[in-house]
Image (cartoon, rainbow, N blue to C red; front, top):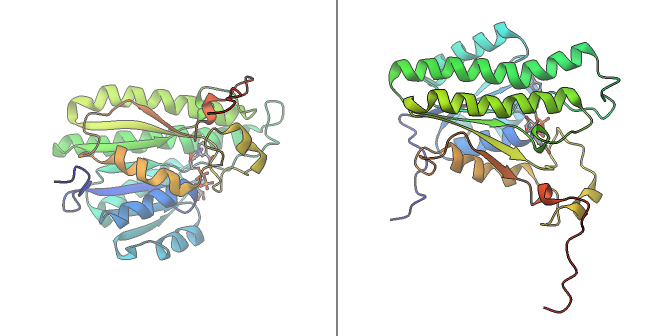
Length: 262
Ligand SMILES: NC(=O)c1ccc[n+]([C@@H]2O[C@H](COP(=O)([O-])OP(=O)(O)OC[C@H]3O[C@@H](n4cnc5c(N)ncnc54)[C@H](O)[C@@H]3O)[C@@H](O)[C@H]2O)c1
């Protein structure tokens, strides 16, 4: 018997993916419906959600939701709408994030942009995780949550609103994994490197710093995301930060060694 058959149980499991309109969230949401899991595609952009669902392998399993996750009332609405559309959400992916703009360095970033970055990444991540966990605990059902952090949860990015939000999320994953573990709810972080998706304006010259020799694509992340989300594949994984970066985080001021003839 293959170990990786049927990673999900579509009769009992349903998913909510934020940021599902573009990039990494879109790739993960599309992969979930491809596995037969009913999935809420949540995003601030209606146009993106519609296009993401249209391009999905099984669009009939996808539910669109449009709203601003920086807004607390919208987050409440999302929780209610998701419950009515797919029943109890067992698998939650938090990929929504406002765009990063290089101009928003420490001396320039506005109070509004700072607050919005934290609200969408950290506050929405906390609030949605906690409320989804509340429902799962009451129903005595296991769950699996995956929050998209960044290599910049640990190293500066010249965008302090972004790196501090991601650092907060990295600790949130550990806090929630520790608190919810006894209820069979696993919480993990997926830590992408340089992925040529919407949120990162790819400079192709970056590839020379990446041991695998290329920037990542959103599609590179979906298989690993599904593996970590699956309670069958990753039953004993919680509180982990799983890096997927082609080796970018190994880069420092030492070049790889000259190997001569091999
Ligand atoms: N692309 C990378 O290289 C990279 C690297 C490290 C971490 N990440 C993280 O991975 C996640 C996805 O990144 P991406 O590059 O795919 O981003 P993206 O910009 O392509 O997609 C983010 C999605 O979030 C949505 N969104 C933005 N603000 C929102 C709001 N207020 N409410 C609801 N939805 C909102 C956008 O409309 C968009 O569809 C982000 O959390 C990002 O920080 C990405």
